[in-house]
Amino acid sequence: MTKNFKVLVTGVNGFIGRYLAKSLSEKGYVVRGTMRPQKEMPSLPGLTEIHMVDNIGQTTDWRNTLMDIDVIVHLAARVHVMKETSNNPLMEYRQVNTLGTEQLARQAAASGVKRIVYLSTIKVNGEKTTNKPFAETDQPLPQDDYAISKWEAEQSLLRISQTTNLEVVIIRPPLVYGAGVKGNFYSMLKILQKGTILPLASIKNLRSLIYIGNLSDAITKCIQHPSAANKVFLISDGNDLSTPDIIGQLSVALCKTVHVVPCPISLLRIAGILSGKSHVINRLTDSLAIDSSKIRSDLEWTAPFTVTQGFKNTAEWFKLR
Image (tube, rainbow, N blue to C red; front, side, top):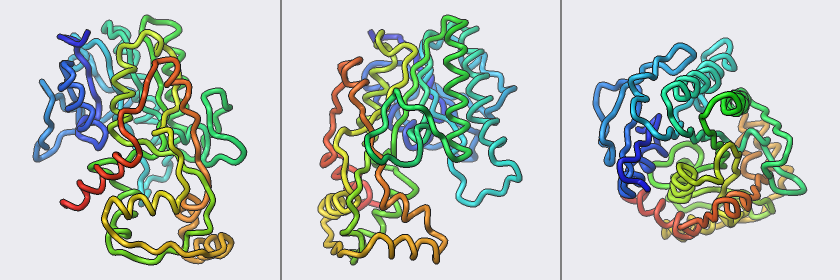
């Protein structure tokens, strides 16, 4: 049942929020969104109303925004900052991602909200996989400030669910791609668009990704499915690819010729150290694979888009920019 079912999407003007709000509206949900005040209002199809929330933290008053809301999808977060200026970045992440999420959940429980779907990150599990894919049963190993703050938020949410009627669903996605993507994936598209030679053919890793259409569909499934309550789900497209495979498929989608040639991984790592880009080389060479079988079995969820379709849709958007 979706008619008159009201969903609050925080961070609705973000990459995932825009797609999700439109998709939920098309499925019949009533969607309210939150975003930080801006001089110019972005075009956000699918919203019935929007509330401005200046700063998310432990003192944010959500009560007016939460009126008549059935379920919250909490996307708003402090994400990675390329040029960190804070003297205490962990505290900055905690203020928004941990304490802000806890404040929202407590006020949601007091307001009679049924469920909160929280978008966390696979980085809670760790930065890379070696012998086997990440699974929900793994001991969390967050390593950077962002991942630590998200892991702490997860724990706060599950504690609140134990003492209130608020149900919690936690989703840990890997890199999300699709129309509107930014960051490293967008940078890769720019490089491939030029047609080039890349010394990456020797990489034999496996990377899990998720197309925004698949993530949005899974979030929608988590909004009302009874078997999702108070669970953690890892999610991916379900088709892990090596870095050379990702480059090859994206190149085809972009209609560009990219030559991928061999180069010893040890030399790539040395180049990363010398250029101060070790983190980039690590992402290109390390594996980060996800076992997403739990959400598929528990919620009978099937990804509606293949990786090929996801790459094609992303490339078509990129070529029009």
